[in-house]
Amino acid sequence: MRFDEEFFNLGYIDKLAYQNTFIHRLDARIKVLISVLFVISVVSFPKYEILRLMPYFLFPVIFIALGDIPVGFLAKRVLIVSGFIFFIALFNPIIDRKVAFYFFNIPVSYGLISFFSIFIKFFLTISILILLVATTSFSGICYALRYFRVPEIFVNQLLFLYRYIFVLFEETMRMVRAKELRSFGNKGGDIKSFIKLTGNLLIKSIERAERIYYAMLSRGFVGSMPYLRKKRIDIYDISFFAISFVFLVFFRFTNISTAIENFIKR
Amino acid sequence: MSHHIVKFENVVYKYPDGTSALNGISFLITHGESVGIVGANGSGKTTLLMHLNGYLLPSSGVINIGDIVLNKKTRQEVRKKVGVVFQNPDDQLFMPTVYEDVAFGPINMGMEESLVEEKVKSALNTVNCLELINKPPHHLSGGQKRAIAIATVIAMDPDILAMDEPSSNLDPKSRRALINLLKGFNHTKIIASHDLDMILDVCERCIVIKEGIVVADGSVQKILSDKDLLEENNLELPLRLQNLKI
Image: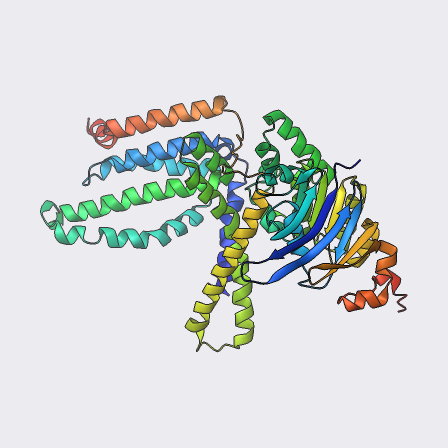
């Protein structure tokens, strides 16, 4: 049953977040801040840029190495999302056909360059975000978001999403199992029963939401959620931030690839 | 002492769809009593518990919690006095970690951060789950979830504890641990359950409700040994009183 497998997959990213490595121990606020700066920095490059994006791969590599995250895990997740980006970038080579240069007599258009540029940017930003979630406890991320004054309503959504996606998955899994146990390999009415199953799930969720709200009210909820600080910023956090920041600035405002090339040529 | 009483006077409640769940229910529970509420499925037990801290307000009739009359204005006050533990702990544990969940109530009550931590730890200690303090709820077993759900409530120091089916879905050992835990509390306890053996263990008094009214109210030994009364209400004698021979 595929659904069961997916369920355990979901638990996997969560398990990763509860490891204890240098990266995991860093304060969530620092990691969130660096990730955001990283994303802004990558995205701010012009659309034909490829070479200067290369140094940024250092960040995911360091997160993977120090955070003890399996590369396959990351690759699989990035691959799943890449379908969307493929269709977004697809038209660039078709529309923008001006030839940029010849690669062994094969014309390379600006469109193709921007196609790859988009892909690299996508790969960098998505992998840093996945790595952030895989190396930070979710409550830590929520606290960090609140700390940076992200509106509470959005953070609360995330908080509840994370808490109840497991419950919802389990509920769905039970329903899918119950259905399969009584359909005896008969695939005929699949779509119809799927529709009913989804509807049922919606009603169950609404009822559950009501009970949760009741539970919150009975513990004195009057409109705002408490977010607790996990730890104090220590010397490791500050040094990690400082070094990352210097590198980000350096990558953004100097052309390292060309510098290395010139250095070698000389 | 009269300040921890729970008094229902002719309480009627109709759900918006017209189903009437409580039909003029009256009883008085005094300070420190532990009361089991039993009855068939759909007899109104859960609806009754939802009134205890003002999630539902009676369509007519009066509820007194301590010296407060329950209404829209007083229900925040009442919620500090009455802690309700729900049937499904997944509904009760909604924060990302056990610590934050147990701290939720005390923080909302305006406690200071250092005091909150103390409260959380002592509540978790009471239910013997201090080592789970940093776990996310979805990594816990059913028995652990139930224990944490109780801790979330006792962290608020309620005068009155109300529980809906606290022993359901627990393995016998966890159930026994729960019973011992409940016996150790000095709060006024109101426990709705079908687990009559547990009620026999924990409570001194038992109220039987049927179709939203009280049909019997008395000492737990008397009520739970009345075979006819129990069978009329879709219940049966507690296993312990059945003289089973194997």
